[in-house]
Amino acid sequence: MQFLNTFNPELIVESPGRINLIGEHTDYNMGYVLPTAIEKKIIFEFQRNGSEKDCNIYSKGFDVGFRLDLTNLSKSEIEWENYVLGVLNEISKRTDKVGGFDCTIHSNLPAGSGLSSSAALECGLAFGLNQLFDLGLSKLDIVQLSQIAEHTYAGTQCGIMDQFASVMSEAGKVILLDCRTLKSQMIPINLEPYKLVLLNTKVSHNLATSEYNVRKRECEEGVETIKEFYPEINTLRDVSVEMLLDCQSHLNETVYKRCAFIVAENQRVLEVAAALESNDLKKVGTLLYEAHEGISKEYEVSCPESDFLVDFAKTDANVLGARQTGGGFGGCTLNIIHGDAIESFVEKATKEYKVKFDIDLEAFEVRPSRGTMIAALEVR
Ligand code: ADP
Ligand code: MG
Image (cartoon, rainbow, N blue to C red; front, side, top):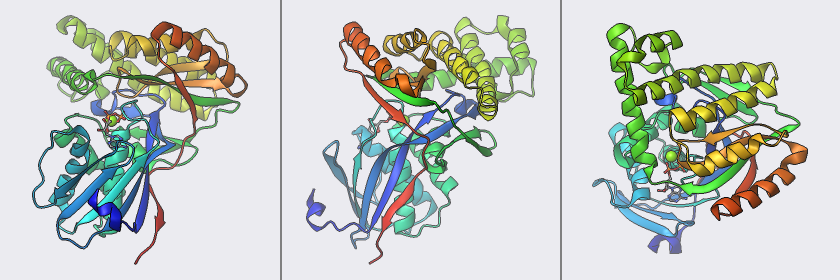
């Protein structure tokens, strides 16, 4: 891109991906989640370019870039540009202090793998611009405006979890987040001698955005019906197993299954948080397997590749638990594996996965890490 000749970055921001230990699709149902950032991240380099409104953005890994005019923001036909444009659009509603800037990004965070590269992209950009132009946005503002950007420009009606985890996480902890009140509690996570290992199915279904929005609507439909019998109910978070059973005959089968998953999953988040605090790792693992069962059979957002890897994990006593992590239809499975057994497990899984799907599995250990931060700042 043109600006690369004169690129002299004055700010570097690192914005991580995230895993969610448990609590899938509970965020937009105002329930609980248990995510944390990981070491894999997107790195942003910024410079102000002295213009009032011209910005250049370049993604090194994707080898794509574009120029935009801050006074003329609108949706793009090109998917990734919408994450950038959506964030700028939200910022422009809050302040007019952003001036022209150039930004390059590079990433070791796989995109479309359920590790929330989209939130890392949105939040890293917002975080960097906040710093560069002294916008006075709080971390929570950055989280919330990034979420709205994903709704309005990228078209995914996502909950708050991904952005919250990317920005707020702390090393060695998972966040028990109540997505209704946004109250959060940092829970230390020590799995020794076990470790968290991601297996990347390398499956990235296009269905993800559209089906995500369908699931959200199905949950809303469930709430509308349950509300006829329990007027105090506004979200699935407030629905108990008893209430749901009470209303079962009034819900169609699909909507009932979706609701049953969310009600149980929300409860599982609290159980995993308690099990972590009492260091009951076996229980944590069992709940992960249970969650995957629900993801696959009730919420129906898994895929054969993820199911295969979770079933494979179950055959190995060195794995305490496993489930697909992220919005669904592929991406990564999260596994709790004994440290001594990781190598042999990954070797076997890789072989079997190749035979079954002819895909080269990718495996990596992840550690709960800190959220979006400034890596280096050099004020001119
Ligand atoms: P996830 O958030 O799980 O990675 P999404 O489908 O929500 O999956 O977001 C992935 C999208 O984010 C990519 O298709 C791309 O548009 C954008 N994206 C992620 N990383 C980058 C990057 N390094 N450069 C450009 N765009 C990126
Ligand atoms: Mg995403």
